[in-house]
Length: 94
Image (tube, rainbow, N blue to C red):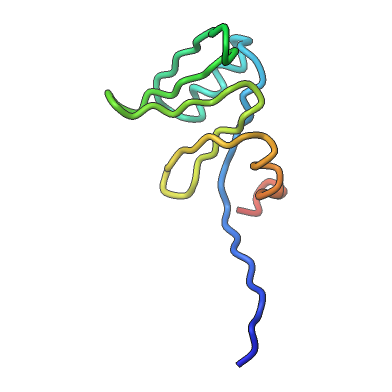
């Protein structure tokens, strides 16, 4: 049987962390449904932390995307990785 190419696709929701503007931070809080903190570091710049538990923190930097998969699992992806793996779909498609 010949080798064939396959594509895996699935739907998710995502929001890009673009600024510390209070309205944008509130959008992120509403999206993740968890407490967050924002750190300003000399070496790494602005870092947003989603507090999932005492020892479970999701970290995103400016321009990263926070992705919510089906089932609610969250992950942070660099802009380049997100844009190479995901294609925006129109509202109501997923």
